[in-house]
Image (cartoon, rainbow, N blue to C red):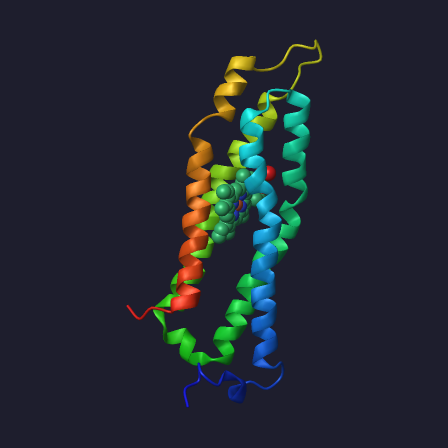
Length: 171
Ligand code: HEM
């Protein structure tokens, strides 16, 4: 009987199935909540009205705290699972998935967050009523390739973690 096949045998305080339940539920929650930022990223590309762009981006900003909460829960319950079924701690897929989540988050912090802030700043109107950047420059930022770079980082990061979770490859 392997630890991985019958992990409940090795768990005491909280049944293993419940930790797994919260791990999967928080991953679904993360994807659902962060879906707001994903949709916003593409919706604003075709928007030119500064007020509307700011309110659409504001919607994404409102989801950030909940996104971090679900992300921390995913990592926390993932670590908990590892310490319940200690054989996981000796598997590369386990640490690689954790590293990928951290790297994806850091890349988002350094690429996606500044991009959203740049758009917010570009929507600013001076007290005189003149926009801080021209309509052409704003359109250029909105349609920049950075959008696809952010999407690629997120999709590859999330896809790779999902692959490691499901297939648990032995390198
Ligand atoms: C494993 C997958 C992902 C992780 C761990 C992740 C994590 C993060 C983190 C930590 C931030 C910074 C939030 C902040 O402090 O402002 C962020 C922002 C963002 N992410 Fe992701 N992300 C992932 C997937 C994606 C995907 C697939 C997309 C798009 C296709 C995406 C689009 C964005 C956008 C647009 C922002 C900026 C949100 C804003 O400031 O309003 N992310 N992400």
